[in-house]
Length: 273
Ligand code: BTN
Image (tube, rainbow, N blue to C red; front, side):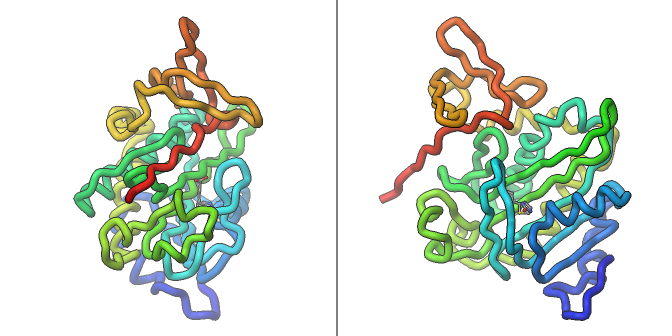
């Protein structure tokens, strides 16, 4: 557990006691402010930090999303955390990992809040088309083995609509807006961490069965979608996801397997009157 001279935003001992987990969070690093929990987790993973190490920050100054995008991470408003995985199982199905993490998050949010959430390939959790949570998995290999994977999760919890930057306002949403009341961030974190611990740290395999849950929560499967690859666009029917987490797109007779590292689904914004 890391200790800083500044009083941490939550008591680390108390938090660790409340996290009655098998593996996830047994080692805990808690920061009031850090550049990025993913960057910190990667740094300590390189130096040998064990599987399940959890890094949590109240605020991030350089929170990152996929494709190097900025992830807004203000203090006192969200859950910004990362954890380390080292299992060989993750290397075989690395592309599937963000989908499985997303499925677990949907499951836990639905249990806790009693609302229906959706997923968007590959790494978003949405509510009525607005982004609630993003997942960023980053891996380091020394082929053929995996050194580590860092899974970073950002959940918008207590931002009001007008606290999101203008460019995000039509796209992002917080759970407090969904529920129409402020939420207990710590209670939510404990719930999510327990779900993730059960799913990813209670056996040696990835919980691939959760892909069924992911597909049920994916509004776009079976629909015509447009994918972006740099400046190019590709339109077709979202047939399925592969065992590696690729999006299988049907264009006429042809089936394309598209990797998340290169393709993104074009943003479709649902407007509510
Ligand atoms: C995305 O939607 O593109 C992924 C967003 C991931 C954000 C989280 S917040 C905690 C962790 N630290 C980061 O810098 N990014 C992830």
